[in-house]
Image 1: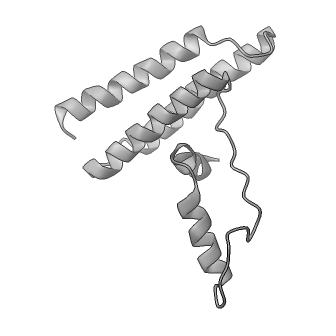
Image 2: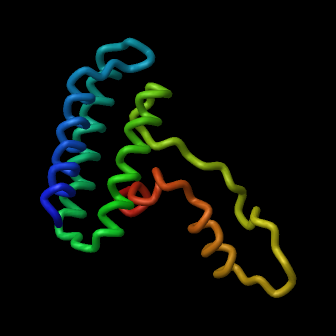
Length: 122
């Protein structure tokens, strides 16, 4: 990891914890706010720990983009949880001869960047 990339990752980690510190739930209830703050902290710790040994620059850049996307979506919608996608099973247009495995591959490709790591942790 280059020093610039390392600083960027550490900066994102700090940004997430600053967001968690100031977080207010949409409902305004104190117990909901506490629960969401803990979720933000735990999710960040788990994902950053899981990916701390990644050395591929392209993969690191992808994780940075995912993190930034989740931050922006969370702040915009005031929801710390990843926004689900709604694709019905076998909902991708299919041609003759496509198998279930191919459908699953297409679903994986169509998944937004902000959900890539979430499914691996959940």
